[in-house]
Length: 224
Image 1 (tube, one colour):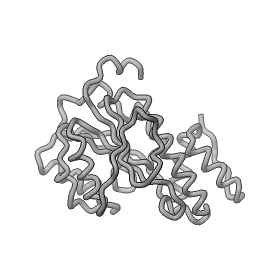
Image 2 (cartoon, rainbow, N blue to C red):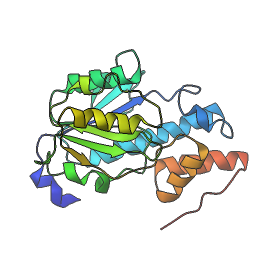
Image 3 (tube, rainbow, N blue to C red):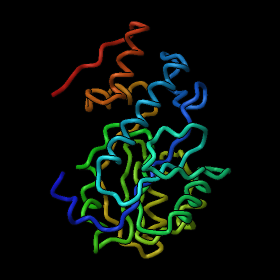
Image 4 (cartoon, helix red, strand yellow):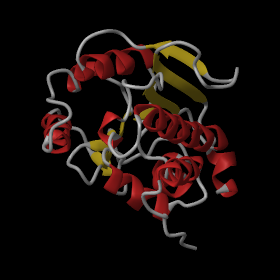
């Protein structure tokens, strides 16, 4: 994706994440994984996401983080998350950034440059927002040319209709929305197995293979 670098405009990338503490992250992977193993898999997923964003020509890289010891290098900004429900916290992140931005979560370790192509030459002229739907009905990416947290606050989160509700909110505000590819995200072990097979060379896939190997559950097929 090197050809995009010279044409980049001002677009900030935000990764929203929380500290990977056992019992607080990826608890739906338990069972079969232990809570400690689930936290290790979550940390690997976050590391993959951070690696991808670090490698791309965004002008700012921001970790919106809940926890201590943010796992990013010094060239990242760390924005502490506020309190409240997810819609409120997301809204506060958008209000804090104040320039064209895209936010992604920590549950899509397979994300790569090809999923973010519309933003790698700067903000697309024909869009006010970008939206990446998730297979479970949510979304993995959300961006706005002019960030406005009120376009997120009040949207029901963690539901199978969350993505539709968020997209409807953007369109009701008159936004022209550029759609990004639909991605699977990690909620259950079945999700994790699918994503690890899709992206077998990620840290996430390695951590999952290691965890499952320890308990003798399954071998993840390796694809090209």
